[in-house]
Length: 296
Image (cartoon, rainbow, N blue to C red; front, top):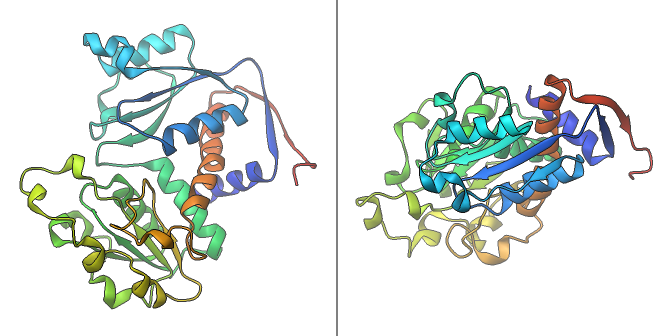
């Protein structure tokens, strides 16, 4: 599944195009704020030639108490083919009406999973190393609140990578014990192939976690210039963003030669095109496919 999506993302990067049996309609329901994921999906949809219906959660019937289930059933009844949903509730999709046959894409569920981010991260890593097996990956930061950490660690382990976790112990959960090894960043920074940093998600902190100061986070747990200098010449830096410069990572490292942070965003468009395309194929909406020889 992962390699299929990666190969399809490569095809879109190289100019792959599709034609549909009829106009295809999509919408994006983001119940949490987003810049990259929402805009990336919108760009992917536009590049695919889909008809994008604007949906403003704050000015919808959600404000009147309409459930997510009823909102999606309404959109389906109106003719929407695909909906991308980001929701603060973990596993929100489990409570949805099984009669809803609309294509549904998880744009992030609470602190649970972030499938499209995981797939674009896999695309970025594979594009760099052409492999996953035996790569050493450090995932560092606010682990317990990060849907990226949960999704990426599970998939990377399945793909054969060796996972290390780092950050304040208060932000580490026992669910990670089955996936990798908890370490001090300084013990592995010179060994790993990928340094995957995570944003500190203060909006998800409870009262006890609010006592954990982030003022000295960079020097204790983040990627400083001194630590970056110890990285392998071939190692790369990743971050799902938004980046708190000077907290998770020293500001000038964001645009360094080792950084793939903005490349991840570019790759996200092509990977989300691939995700949407698989749904369109399943729904039988694609009439023909072609490769654009003039793309490059």
